[in-house]
Image (tube, one colour):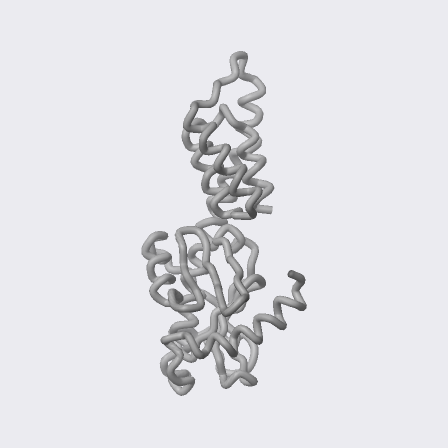
Length: 222
């Protein structure tokens, strides 16, 4: 789906979504006094930029995100979020987050709705604090995966060079072969988040025996 279609369909989905979201109560909760950051600016357009939570834990952040989003429209899974409204469905993989600009926007033409705006999906709330928490959680996940991606890319060249210099190439275990088959199948089914996770599991078992795994993950991250 191209960007124009996504924007148009997102606007329609936001309107439909309001009938389902349990936390949508009133837009009168927003004021300068209850803003948790100086970057919260009342008005049209971007009103909040997420703040990194230095003491947070990855699993706890995902659980808080699920608490905020899980309803008849959204379902938070271990590595992605599903959206389903009537006949429309979409998926946001957490592995897509690196490189995204995560912000909260306020749409006056939709009753002052606060929307965590992403290229692939948007999350609407009447309460500014709920939108901020979702943005902060997604930002934490993004930064966690960005560090993971940077570490992986830094290892890629070294492991490839190490593999080339080995006189006897290490063989892959049956467990690695099983994971590779599953990762390839997930990739073919466009379940990119699951494919990345499976390739990473393969590399954790033996970081040198399957150098192509680094390239596969790098391609999926790109």
